[in-house]
Image (tube, rainbow, N blue to C red; front, side, top):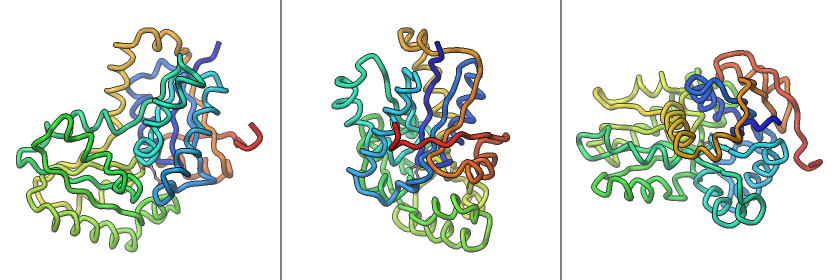
Length: 275
Ligand code: DGL
C-alpha cells in the first residue's frame, strides 16, 4: 500500500524543503500539498493557522501518510504543538507530524562565534516567539534578534522577488535586524519561502555573516529521525514517486512551483471542503 511522506506548506515555500529532502532521501514516496488558496498564513491568527493546518494534516492522513512534515515555519510555530499533543492522540495515535523549527534550533548556535543570531520570518512566526524560546533550550547563552518581513512572502508568491521593489524591502528589513543586534554573525531564514531571495539577501548582508536556510538542515534531521524511528520508517513506501497537490489553480501552481522545486511539477487540484 502507498504510504508517502507528506510535506505541507501554505504555498510554494515548502518545495524548497522538499527539494532537499528528495535529494537526501530519494527512495521514499512523497506527496506535497500547498494550501495556495489560503496563503499566505503569515499574518493570520493563531486559531486560523491551527484550523487550516489541521485540516491539511487530516487530508494527508486520508491519502495514507503515516508521517507529515510541516515545511512551513508559520504552521510549525502556531499549530504543531497542539496537533502533536491534543489532536494526534485522538485522531491518529500511530502517525507522526514534525515541524521545521526544532531541527534548526538544535544547531543554530554552532554557527555563531559572537553569540548573536538573527532570525528572519513572517509576522506570525516572530509573534509566536517560538525561535527565541526553542533556541534557549539548546543555546541558553545565544542572543536572538528577530525581524518580521511581512512583505517578502507576498512578493515571492507573486513572482516579484527579483525586482527593485523586493530589494527595497529586503534591504530595509536587514537594516532593522542589524540595528537591533549589531554583533549578529549568523542569520537564519526562518521561512521556507526565503531561499528564493537568498542572492539579494547576501548582497545586503554585512561581510562575514553566515546565512542559513532550512532545506538541508530539515533533510538531515529527517534522515536521522527515520534512522531512529524504525517503526515509522518501515511504514513509509519506497517507490521514489512524487505527487503535488494545491488547493488553488493547478496552472498557477505548476508555473510557479518549478522555481521552488528546481524541476517541472504537474499538480492536481484538491478541494479540502469536499473531503
Ligand atoms: N513558508 C511559510 C513559512 O515558512 C509561510 C509563508 C506564509 O504563508 O506566510 O513560514
